[in-house]
Length: 171
Image (cartoon, rainbow, N blue to C red):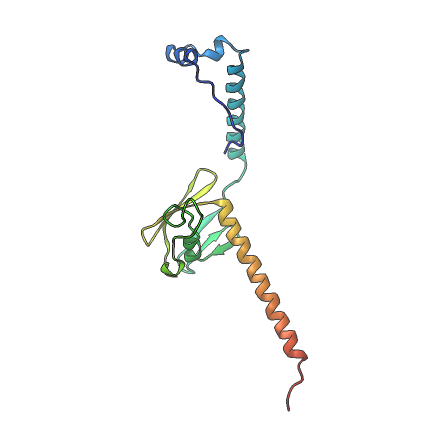
């Protein structure tokens, strides 16, 4: 989205001119109000151009045969993504404490419908009746954590294998 904050001047004159079909900023192009509206317009045009020419959204689909949600060149189990829901029904808004009991989500849960929400999130309707909204950065973070955990497990297994090879064998 637009990464700027604007204080929008809502003067009676601006509203009256807009209602009459004669925009205030056309009558007063050098006014401070016109400058704010023009800055906002430039930001909107810039963001639209970015979304049109820049790929913000990952390619996401559900592979029913493998029971995996594919995200670009990676994948995540549907139950893992469902358990990561951060909506108000799953996480206490004021404290961030998880309300959802992860073990209550069966491994068989699957997405019935997945659709992008703007350029920032994925909306998922789940087989358990729940609806989730996942910002793409949350999904990417989950995938990154999974890769790091997998790498750590592989390193630990390699260390264990080396340790076992170094121990003397009994005859």
